[in-house]
Length: 330
Image (cartoon, rainbow, N blue to C red; front, side, top):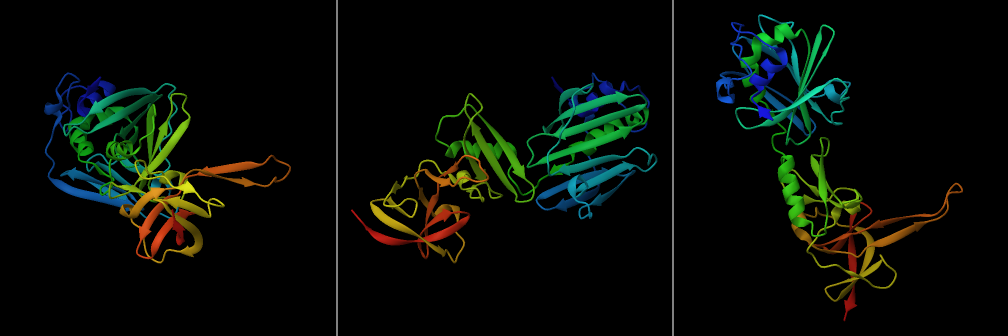
């Protein structure tokens, strides 16, 4: 069941009437909870994480975006009512994701007046009330957290609903649903489900496709421009629907694509290679490594994208676009 955040806060906190800021009962609609904010907007940014929050008159806030210790404190906004500075909430970016222990925690799905959704997690431990509101469909993990006296928190349910709804998270990057759509449209192999993870350092989504037995079928990356992109791991570069090259000679040093044989060289491409330059990808190959420390041999399988660049045909091999020399054709 989904409900408005103000109503949810009241349900969690068992709030009464006549409280400062206009308390609501859990039965009130989401429209009743909506408040138009006219106030100061606070912003914070670190790496590819960014957030913004609008605070109405009578509320104060402070931001942090370059602390020395980084981590979850590297990008956050702390805010509170001016007449109750002990009531402090924090909106954070979580570059390593959010991990919760579910024991004793209540989970409920909520919907803001704007249509944005989140999961509210709450727990009462002795005299301390803990609330964590995790936003959905954002590029990376973002959440608002509070720990303190619930009787104080309950007094500000209505303004909090508007403040939390004003959050702008990960602006300039595709939302999770958008990245999944781009990747699924390009991925032609059969899969059961997909999982998406956003790298707040690189600004790239990695969408992984899984079979019914949870085995990985493949993965694709989506960049800030909402298009497929290549990131380090060659296995992430599989592009479906493009011609697949055939091995020619000692693979992967030589391959055939569109009836032409190319030999991979060690010369890097001097210019940047865009996604639209991709013309195909090579067949899978396996590198077999020698026995190490008494352990058995192991191998690596990868598929390499092929691009037509200003300098000629190139292959993305071992993290570098490398030029190929023309060997001939059929």
